[in-house]
Length: 113
Length: 115
Image 1 (tube, rainbow over the protein chains, first blue to last red):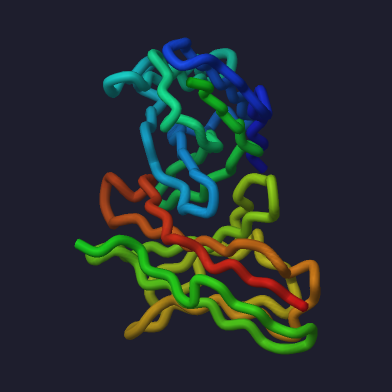
Image 2 (image 1 turned 90 degrees about the vertical axis):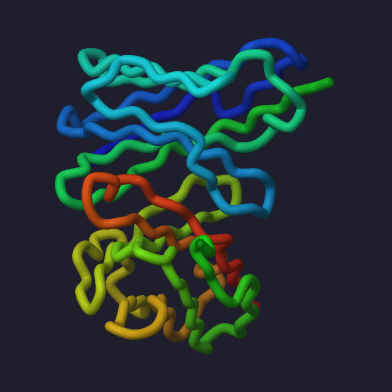
């Protein structure tokens, strides 16, 4: 089955800096890659996703890149703010008619003011 | 459009009791997924259901755990004879039919504590 590795497990940055979180996946058939943000005690929230027919996607300060050949994808957050502090999870799925997500173990991002 | 609803939000059970967790998907969503999250870990897939059908239960423990999504009413995750190791946050997610079936939206979770 699919295996998703996520790095780093913790990331501390100063407000205004950029943050990058990287994930690799094992199943070359995977074609859907969402990112979720989870604040302490809250639900995971879908913040951005990318499909295999696209190499990069942006939404304001957040961007995701995908390299299908290398089987890795990354989340980029620019101009970080304290409210970006949370645990971020990457996931992958095959998405053929139904979608079972395999999640990475998460990255705790701490943005210091 | 209300989001995914789960209840109860917190559930305390003694060892050996049964736990019933409920999930109402978003309006218009016909796919329900259950995940378990242990402290400081990621989300582990348990089961995927559509109305009256279990599509994939490859992540469910073979014993004590069952799930259903009846024609009417919420999806239920049932854990019989709970043990301390069942203590975790249980999240359900739902997704719509059609091209956006991949996009899963999560409920607030049920935090199960087994004493």
